[in-house]
Image 1 (cartoon, rainbow, N blue to C red):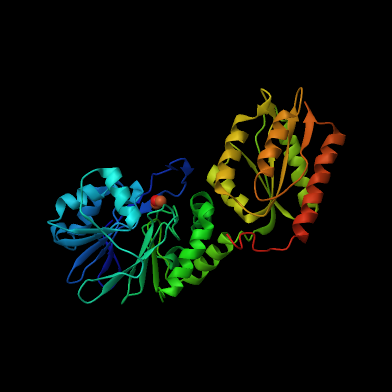
Image 2 (cartoon, rainbow, N blue to C red):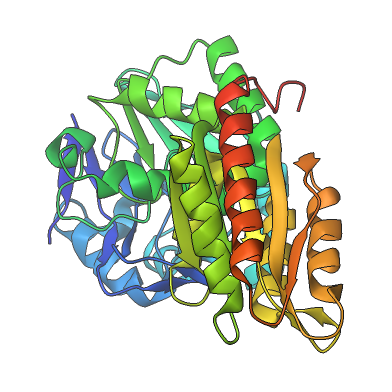
Length: 404
Ligand code: FEO
């Protein structure tokens, strides 16, 4: 695929990674893209690069527009290697391009590549004149790393937003309106936020506020992954506002793993209880369903019930790993619950409840069943599901993250 003009003299020169299915442990059933943008003005500027294996492809894309040697400015919005590891190849082809990054970006690039590059540090509000147009920089620390930065092309109103508003969504189309009918677009945007950005929600809120203070009014939001937003900017900004503020839907997620099927029976009975209460319930099995999807659904659900058997006087390993991951994402304002089966003592379920209690929200008493559930015990699970449905229906959809 060749370069794509996204605005007058602004070209996408990135790479499509259709085959990617694992992005550092995050399942990517729709692949991803690494977006790099070329701004052709009196000064030719490159905004971000691509993952190193795609650097030659990016340079070939650039060569169809200008000689890469003529690039005079390279902006590194983010140090993470999916966007910066193409830098050595780019800088080797330019004559003497000026490299700019945030302060933390300059530190991070030196530590990652150890090339002794001269890096000009830019701060929020600073501009670089390209001739007919200007680039303005907006620091966005922790969206996603301390170095993260946005770059705004003033005259064309293009906001290069780095990881923010990205999706692991590979397509030959470059704009939201071209793929809006594909339900995976917003699902991949949701899962991207839930798995990568969620812990930094307060910083995203701050970055969006800074954009407003800077008078930035983008006609195009061009993230570093997936398609650019031009027709549905209000939709993605609204979704980010909801996700950042922990606004969930009146739905329940039951997520479990099972050893000999007892915890699965419990999961089914709980789900039946939730459904009988008129609330949508999603049932997911760890190890069978994509973790990224489970976490996306977790973010959207007001209540999350986690099931797993006791093993070796502790949590079932995959459930323990899930809870560790979940805790790191710092979800807010959920109704949590733990359930599962045991043989000698309900140690695993207690440990699960303790992890859930350490997170924001309210945690119900665990429901534990010895070996195989009886009909009465499955009735208790059904009753738990009904209770959770009632609680979810009555819960206000408040801003769980208000105040950070
Ligand atoms: Fe797509 Fe934080 O890198």
